[in-house]
Length: 480
Image (cartoon, rainbow, N blue to C red):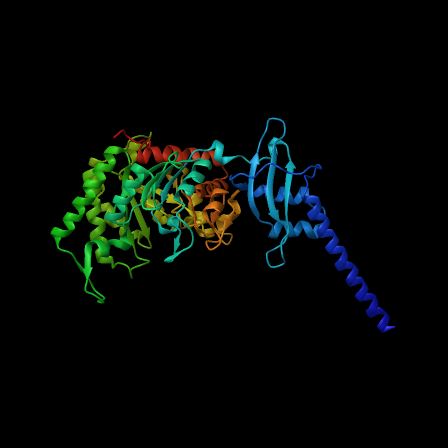
């Protein structure tokens, strides 16, 4: 009797396994066609997919409970778009129904829906400004941790930004040399050396690029000091040498300001989280020196603050009266109430520190690093929208699934790991995993909107429109 039951159990398991295989195979066949009975032939484009579309796919495409749970947890889009026509709006996408470890099966699908179910299309309706990017970073030249993974793709990154609704990008410099390079990028666009020929890529010029001039606090030692070979101690350069460096920055800032390409002094400030790069004393010297450049050039401050809020606030307070006398806001109804024209970039400190910066008239810049924890979200929620400016700090500060702000994201960009990525995939719409781009500013806007219970458009209009214009002006190039 026991032997019979064991045989019976084995047979049931075999039947169940066979039924499962047939069920999955049927789903693959079914999804090879439109749920309305014809194949999907429209090619996928490079626009991002909204997260709500994923649940829409699982709801309409699957009826089996097990399969539906699987698609909602392990499915991933490899290319997607929301296309529209007056009579038949639709979502289209290609996805996997099984995890990579279990093996994968791909299918193409068209899902018809009423227009009210289509998530607002940010790339065509909203006008973003990424007010803090690092376009000179080696990742956009295909190099990660000193290893070359792919060919330079900054042109594709900029094109994707434009297609996603980003019309202007403010990129940051960290040394006098980078300031020169950045001004050249803003003036002349993306350049590549191909077969010994210097080529300017005009494909991404639709996005307007603006830059800063300055020395990052962690780079102050290499700019303003010297160190004996192998020695642990930095020694400040002579006052004459430091003044020469400041004159170089001042000249460059004035030139860039005249052409409309340089819109701030920075990124400069204090960073106590990475003192192994530069000690506090040298950071303070560099910070004060650059404040003088800002006074001479009458440009806004683009401030870096990492675990140094109290000291940064104290030094800025010493300059309040001098900035109030010389700086004028280009636009904005409440400009007369502001005392120092500037932004505290990539803010991730307490609400108490934020309020102190706001009391000086500074704006608060937020990106993925500002949205990691619930405490971060609480701080951003309590900062008035009229004092926030959106940025990415790309290629850093991505918003990851483990971050508190991720649940508010609506727009998902398909990604490949850096080892798998190439420029052709970039043209198809893929980003590099964990490498942020200016297009990801849309995600920052979505998190802020979710936190404050507002529409994304309201956030973009204020934080990327009014606030940016009030601080930096209208971001217009001037004729040479």
